[in-house]
Picture (cartoon, rainbow, N blue to C red):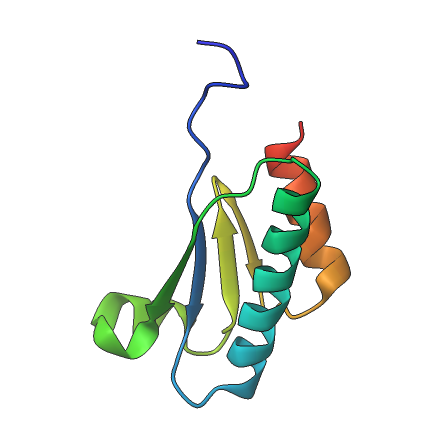
Length: 94
């Protein structure tokens, strides 16, 4: 299987309801993914996980949300479009 047919890694946003930083990260990711699709570049689906629905997530991420994971990479306390764009490019365009 070559790289072009390999499945895309999961893109996951951990956050919680009422977290304005999480909402900002969600909007930024949605915009960046739409931009990638428009440009014909790989764009995984976005999974949003509410940390309050799982005790392990709440324990792991409550102090660092929003947390974004893509493949084996993780960014914590991230809302910067530049950092998110770089993460997408590093993982998906390598």
